[in-house]
Structures are given as C-alpha cells and as structure tokens.
Image (cartoon, rainbow, N blue to C red):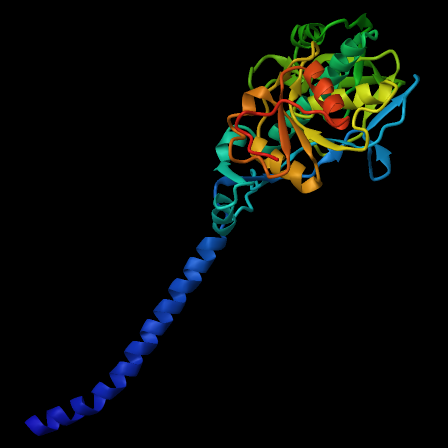
Length: 368
C-alpha cells in the first residue's frame, strides 16, 4: 500500500512545476496590464507647457492681430510676440500619469493640482468664460495705456465683458457688445445694468439697445432666478467699462484667454500709431498685465513663456520685474531677459535693444 500511494505522488510532482510557472506568468502578465492601464488613466492634475506665440504687429491666418482703421498708421517690421501657456488635463481629464511624470522632469513644463485652476464648484466652461473676460479686459486696458502714453483722446463705453453658458443672455448678447440703454434708459456705468436687472422681478423682459461692431441692435432678454441668490433676477452677463479710441482698434485673436497680453498689445498699438519702427526687424517677446495708467503687473506661467519665446526665436524678453526671482535658472541661453515695471520702461527697452544698445537685465538671468 505504501508503494502504491507513493507512486502516483511521484508522477504528479513533475506536472505541478509547469502549472505553478504558468500561474506565475499569468499573474505577472495581469499585474503588468493593470500597471499599464493605471499609467494611462487620467490623473487630477493640469500640465502647463509653452504655448504658441503671436506677433501683435503681424498677422495670423492672413488677418492682422491688431486692426486699426480711421486714423494714420505706419509700417512695422520685426516681431513683438505675446506669449501663451498651453494647458493639458483640465476639467475633462486627459492627462495621464505618464504625461505628468514626463512633465516633472521637463523644466519648461509644470504640473499643478487641477483644483487650483478648475475648482470643484466651478465648471470648466465658467473658467473659460472668465479667462475670455480677462482677455477682453486686457485689450481694453491696453488701448487705454497706449493712448495715454501717446496723449491721444480716450473714451469709455459700458460693454458686456462675459456671457455665461446656460443663462438667459447666452443666445442673445455677446462679449464686447456696447450697452447703450435698457428699456430706453441710458446706461453710463456698469452699475446701471446690475441695478436695473436686480431691482425688477424674476421673469422681467429687458429691452437692450446695443452697438455690436458698429451696428445698432435691439435685443430682448427675459431674466431668470439667480441660482446663487434665489429670488433675485439675473440674466447671466458680466459688465464693465471698455476704453476706446476715437478711431477703430480691433483685436482679432481667437481662443486665447487671460490678462497677460496687455503689455504686448499696448506696444503693438504704439508701434502702429507712431512713425518709425520699434522692433526694427528684431525679434522681441514679452508678457505682463497692463493697467490704464501704464503699470505692468504679474502674470502666471513665466517659465513656460520664457521657453516658448526662445523656441519662437526671440532675442529679448520683457518680463514684469516681480518675476525676476522666479525666472532664476530658467532663462534660456541666448534670451536676454529685461525687467519692466511700466509701459514707458518697455518702450525704452525695445528702442534701446533694436538699435544695438544694452538693456537692464534681471539679476538672476544667466544669459548671453
């Protein structure tokens, strides 16, 4: 009996090793698949990378970035580039763990938690609408700063700065519509619009008289209940003051948001409205917010914009002075980075550089 029981055991043992090997191989393959899938799943981060640059005194797809008509303009040469940051990830996901890891090892890119840019209580569309509103405001402030620098007359208009999705105004009003009157009453400041809408019952229909790109229009909008302030009438727009010249200045860029183009827009307007030539065939880039009085302010994504400017071929980069420390160690070789505090600083720096002079550099900038 003992021999009979041992004999089958001796026969089974050699077969168990391949079986165990197959099990290990299957487990390893399964683990590899799971790890591969995990690496490709979206992660809750946003990648910031160098975006495209736009020459504000040039053209995009055959259309001038800054169109000026109704007054004397002058030829320009060279490039005055506004810089941008390209976002990946966002509210709809799409950024994988592999993408995020690769960006952590690329000094020209950055990865930030998604909620810093797209808070959970704010939709992606609302963030994009706000970015568009900031961009429109930067255009307005750029006009004001440039005309104040040139000592030219400036007028103000009450305009729609943003139209939010899924609101009563979404199908009727558009950003940059100038609001002339509501129900026949002249509008002279943004507060007039807010007070008129909120002082009337929910469901009131308002008759807007507007100017849309030089064409007079009558628009009717029926108010709804404000989801953030129940019982209060609202139509879903942002309203602000827009600075304008006595002639036409039109910005044509599409699908760009944020306020950081203000500095370069102001330079572009000045270049087109004055004899001579600022850039003189040189390639200059920059970034910075602009106030109507000509003050240059902080922006985001400075490292990405430095890299984008260099990739585009820029030689000189105009940077808000407050970002010099942040640029330390990230200024590409061959790109001179000069600190700017005012529009006047920027004009002088461009004029000096384009005529072969030396400009002030950020103390931390290791450039040639």
